[in-house]
Length: 386
Image (cartoon, rainbow, N blue to C red):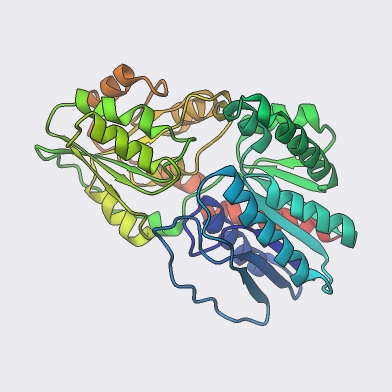
């Protein structure tokens, strides 16, 4: 059996998709009862300009990793589109004379999924999609100007073709359910969420709070997070002994820095993206973990992967989210306070009312173990071979 795996980001790049796909591939090898070959087509690490790890892919008889170098894109739609065109062109070139039994494509911005759909139709093989976001939903919400009307129509056609071509569609958030079931009924759906990597298991618990309260945000700094809309004013409102650390990079980092300077904020630092190992140390130093999504309707359906990582630390969480994310946190994660996105007053109240007593989340960690979820995904992929 030979499987083609398409993932724009792959380990060691810092992306929810990269760690997810690596775990799924490991599980495919373990769960398959027959000899299995996997071609992984991905990119050279490029998620963040300030984090370019050295790649050391191991050559194996069963797994072949083909990496494509793309342009040093910014977070703009045009530069990202150009980077994907390079990825798509070289992917089609690589698989031109190769035969596969099925395709697995993990995608957040639809394009990788659509590439998988094109190859699936051309080679007449089954397609398993792992959908981590609703790209058309985000485009319609974020880009409201008339100039983007044609782009929305074009993406709508791509989405329709992609979903109709798929034999199975996994959605990482049940918040996506109504959208897809309404538009694409009678498809095979599953809801395997993101998960917690084993590296986050059995982390030591520190319950002693010092005079300085350390708040940490780790992740992308983009339009989706809207940090520039809340942090500058929030940090001015917090007591002087509250110190904020931001770890990450993204298209809105410069704007965030400008807003912080504009408001003369001093109780913060911004650190470039770091490896998981270093990030864990930062988590252990923190007293509160901060999560925030911008106030766009599209984000009412999402379930950020950062939730799982944060929860595994047992640290208090303050989250500015609405919709499905809010419901998920309140139903599954102890010692988590939720506030309205971009609402400084509510965010301040959430932080100042934090309960610093440790609430172990053992049940949550067991339920959302990345290994367990990946095994379930792998089994559902392997079921498609018949």
